Image (cartoon, rainbow, N blue to C red; front, side, top):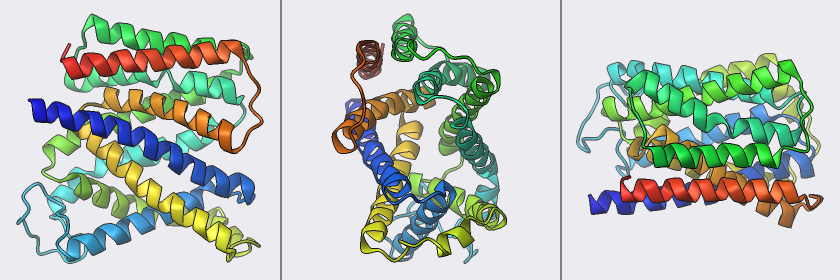
Length: 313
């Protein structure tokens, strides 16, 4: 039990740090170099992740199954076909999560987007209860309530209402909750390791994303991008791919080891790191007392939740 607790702490802290750096790298590519296609960045991250996983598996550095000596006769998928099919709900939920999240950032202000996205913790608790019947203590419910209160406090000065925009964000929250709950459930029932889950998700979603970027013209736009061969742009893309691999590993590991709710709250901690790094690196963020108070409440709620988890309350 003690060793499990020691594993949970690093999983939660590493995820926040990797996520913030990965977000900054992607932001640098999209803003500093005026690169317009986030889909292409996601595609490159997925391809590089699969290539790295394939190489490490071939070199026997990692195993795609929980049993290290488990083998398969399928040289293409590298995992038994039955296990690959078992991960299909995870891949479908990931694609829905990705597409709806991209749509959710349109037509709504950044403060309200951040505020509404943080209510994902409530949706995650509901999805976990519906799928697995999992219930939480009153102290955990209280910490989640503090996080949501902090989110609305942070966005209190931007209460413009957009029915469509709000609806899409809430759908994105539901998709996020289903995606994380799928990782938690399939990760514990498929017999695949964290690397195996990442591999199956990549080889299923990669071709779909490649087709999507092709018909949208994103790949053509990338080839015409003037800074495509710029050393600076390529360095940012490489950093983005490396950090995306790290964050995806931490997301899958943390969600499987702990729970979907824990991963969602780790995402709130990531937001704090992202805001801090964004203010230091990019500037342009005006001081807002309500925003600072809201961020502080969110951080407090996340710390209380971490305390409850570590103490088993």
